[in-house]
Image (cartoon, rainbow, N blue to C red; front, top):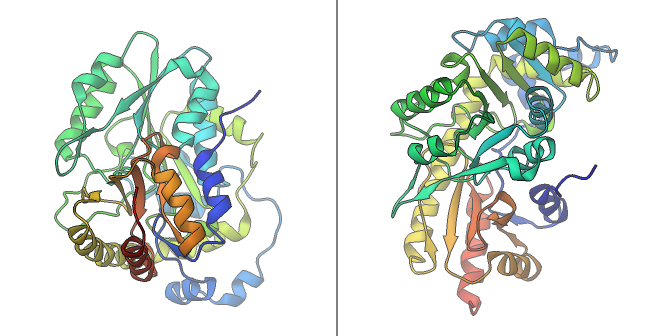
Length: 375
């Protein structure tokens, strides 16, 4: 049975490791294993002493206990440690849905949040709940969401802070969202991979796990904490029957988390606030550079500053971002990400602000624009 090509990952497979100046990374600046263990005051030799046998399928009990403590309502039993964060999307789709169930997905979105659910229920049964643009930002239309719900609707899929717009609902909007799914007895798949990356001046919101019992929350260490190489993620599932169903599917995928990843995840969790604050500082520094850049190129771009997370969706006033991005990667080694892979149009690109090399890449982008005749 075929599945839609994973366009974003195909794009990065082609360009990420061959293009030197990158402006589209969704993760934050990472650190080495030695740096992480030094921060956590863990002896590097302990990693070398780690046994490489099977681990507990649901995850290391100490790691699950530590993660559960960061939520108000979750217990260690509610935490399922994944082999990789994207596995959580697959497991949830398989465990929650039957063919012909209807799903509503906030769009644009990371491919897997659309394609995996289409794969399970059929493309005609996945409805897009589109962000609405304003002159300076993005907004959610809850009336439109309510109109899309039918008796067949089983699940709403969202991600906040949002990839790729950088949007974060207000506390009042989160309450409104929960009221809608609760009224219609829907499951809520809530991707929180960027949770905690809140910019100055933006009100924070709680985890969906703490406000709705029928939420399945995906989180991990890749984005907020800048550790994508660990591949550590988890689901928070407070419904026991669903959790057992997810575990049965997990036996067919990763079976259990990698022991080295869990060891390093325990170290990372001890210093998670240091990692988070480091990454927020980097994002806000890069956002200031971006503000100056877009002010100089006001006629070329439509800039809507993100509220949270490490990415933004930026309009470029040219016929095709895809064509331009391909040419610029070849000519100048500068990489931007056409947002068509995320379900947006070909006049938008996703920009990332979490990397230390952002300033250098932005300078090369600026120079290329000055030297190029734009279409």
